Image 1 (tube, rainbow, N blue to C red):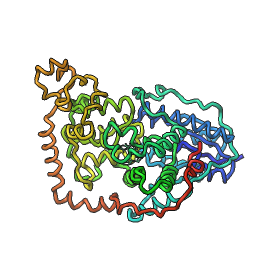
Image 2 (cartoon, rainbow, N blue to C red):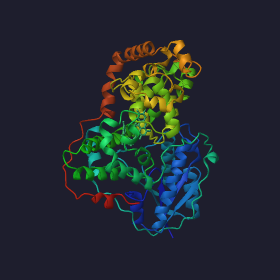
Image 3 (tube, protein in one colour):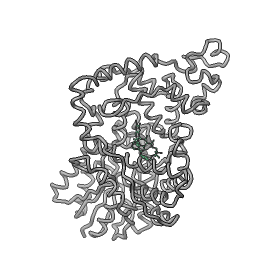
Image 4 (tube, rainbow, N blue to C red):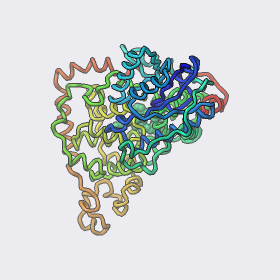
Length: 507
Ligand SMILES: Cc1cc2nc3c(=O)[nH]c(=O)nc-3n(C[C@H](O)[C@H](O)[C@H](O)COP(=O)(O)OP(=O)(O)OC[C@H]3O[C@@H](n4cnc5c(N)ncnc54)[C@H](O)[C@@H]3O)c2cc1C
């Protein structure tokens, strides 16, 4: 008996799952997830990613078994596993989503494509996000995104399942060489947790979105916190867009939550906008988007600066507090991520690539397309974005005026008076002794003078930017990667309150 193989990757759900639906229409279905050792040995992989994945896979297996199927877990390199399965019992078609992943997964997909061709096998790949493969022109991209999001979400199909052994056996992280600590307060994986998070945000927390997402104090509850569930595909982007728009449709016009939800939808659009950049240019994981910036920071690698940053010892309290929070939770809000990269790229003058690899491990929601595009944008190497340099002392004054965040994550600073909290190295020695916090002993002393080092860094960047050939090359980058107009307003259709809960958010 021939069958269809559905290869789950970062799309760990049965709802709104095109490969599963199309496979079910073509005959019996075997659902497979492949744990690929080479991907887990990569520098951007971390224990927390694997544990979140494991939780999501167990949840997916339950959802499949509820419907009569189950998830078959295979361990090995994708081509080897597919080849083995095919030799054991040839399948007629391979179904999966397209993946805009890191360089390794891109190469893996090319190898799978070659393998399929050599076996005369059809591989149906579907677009999971508003990302267009082999995009020729960005002009129609927004319309494409809207059209994809306007399509109805797909119900889980009834399938003629091929049984999977029960329960799925998932190796421990150590067996894959993953040794990083798991942040004790990280989010838990799985679709059920994802739905809870979405409901909680749309019905309750979204009121704080506007005005609450920039401060690291309010952001953990004001932001949706959906990023890991989107990154691992526990929720589809389209079902989040649908649920949000339905909620928008039922909220009164003067409801404060409308502003937040509208801003939230534009971020869901950004999600794909940034991923498109990596899809169109996979090399941007390693090379400057604007090649005119090559050589800007490469030769100046400073291991002491990198060590201070990654161990939360820069001496700038807000930066170190953010690193402490990352270690505990695996998450930071956008503004604080941008600030960390800015501090790394300007006063500490570190190249974005190793910093980005370290942060990829730290962020539970690591999504290569967003991550590497943002890394380059914040480091000033895209050549098309405004240079944003965040001063960590000003950011602390603006977003943590009472010092609650800094004191919470850096207990050593709890006894430092408020006037000195964001610049403790300026504290008179006598005061340091009085409050029992000695700079250089209990807390780090900054490695560089912030103002002076930032000024020098900007000057070096502007020098490159000013070159005629660098200016000339900008237009082609804008043409290929630049966003076009703002999102057009969607025509509204009224639906009854609560409709979406039943129709969209099922496990
Ligand atoms: C250097 C740097 C690296 C980043 N790396 C990642 C990453 O690996 N994965 C990731 O999901 N986000 C990344 N972001 C974007 C952003 O910080 C996170 O999406 C956000 O903090 C996740 O929290 P949330 O889901 O509560 O966000 P919300 O504000 O609730 O946003 C909802 C969703 O919109 C998308 N989104 C939000 N902001 C952005 C943005 N600026 N660009 C693109 N998409 C966005 C995400 O999918 C997010 O889950 C990065 C930002 C920076 C500055």
